[in-house]
Image (cartoon, rainbow over all chains, first blue to last red; front, side, top):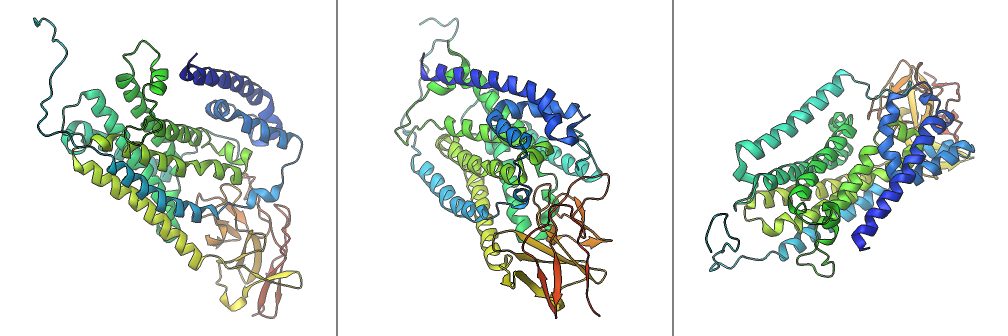
Length: 125
Length: 348
C-alpha cells in the first residue's frame, strides 16, 4: 500500500464512522439536545456533510449538552482578539508567499523551438 | 431566526443579495470563458478543460477575496454592514465554485493514469523538499478542505450547537484557506503565466485583503472599547451626559466580556454586547420600543430582559445597573440569559 492509498483508506474509515454517527445523531441525539430541532426534519439533510466531516466535534459537543456541562457564559464571549493576529499574519505571509513564488519563475529559452514527439494518427514515421 | 430550523428563511434582502452574487459569478465566468478568453488566460494554447478550470479557479479566488474584504470594511465603516448580512451564502457558493475548479483539474491533469485520479493527485508530484516545482496542489487541497468545513457548518444549527465561540474559531479557517490559496496560485499558475493581467490582478487583490485587515486591526486598537474602571465591586461605564437616547455605550469588563448599556425612554438597561446568534455587537444597534436590533443579521432583543420577542427564543445575559450621581455603573457579574432587570430611571 502506498501513501496515497493509505490516505484514501483513512478517508473511507473516517467517512464510515461519520455515517454511523450521523445516523444516530440525526435520528435520536438532535431531538434530545436541541428543542428547535423537534418536529423539523428537512434541515437535517443539510447537516449530514458536516457530521461526516467533523464527527469528533459532534460527539464532543453532544456529550457536553447531554451531560448539562454547557456554560451559558461561554456563548457570549466572541474571540475578537484573533483579528489583530490575523492582520499581522496576512501582512507578513501574503507578500512573502507572492514574492517567493515570483522568484521561482523561470523564463522559457528564447531560442527553443517546441517539437512534437508524438505521432499524429495516420502519419507515417 | 430560530423558530424551528427552516432550510433558508428567505426575505427580500436575501433575494437581492443572492441575486447580485449569482449574477456576478455567472457574468465573470461568461466573460472569462466566452467573451474575452484571452484576457485572463495564458497566451499559450490551452484546451477548453484547462480554460474552464482557470475560469472557476480565478472566480473562486476573487470571491474569497471579496468575502475577506467584507469583515474589515464593516469594522472600518458601518455602511458596509449590509454586506455581512448574507455572507454565509457567499461562502457556500465559493466552495461550490472551488469544487468545480478542482473537478476540471482532476478530470484533465490526473484522469489519464492507470491509478485512481484521486490517488494520482497525491503521488504525481512529491517534491516537497524543493521550492521550485513544489507540489502546489497540496495548498489547493488544504484550501478546499477548509472551504468544505466552513460550507458544511454554515447552517444556524451549527452556531447554536457548537456555540458562536467554537463556531467562529472553526470559521477562522478561512484565513488559513486564503493564505493557502495565495500559495496555490503563486506556486501554480503564476509560474507559467505569460499574461500579466492575471498576475497583477491577483497580487493587487491579495494585497488589498492584507492592507484592509491591517487597517481594521489598527482602527480597533485606537478606537476600540475601553476597559471599564472597577469601584466598590461595580464597573464605571460612563457619565450619563455621554449617553444618547436610543443608543448604547459599550464597556469592556476585566474578563474580556462587553456590556452594552442603553438609554431608552429615559431609563437605563444593560445586556451583553454579544448577540446569541453569531456574537454580533448589540451595542452598535439602535433601540426602538425596548428592542435592540443586531447590526449583523437583524436578531432583536428586549433590553430589559435580554429575550427575543416571541415566537423567537434567543436570550442574552443581562446586567444589574445603577446610577451613582451622574456615573452609570454595572455589576460585572452577568445575570443568566433572559433575566429581567428593572430599568433605572434617569432624573431629568
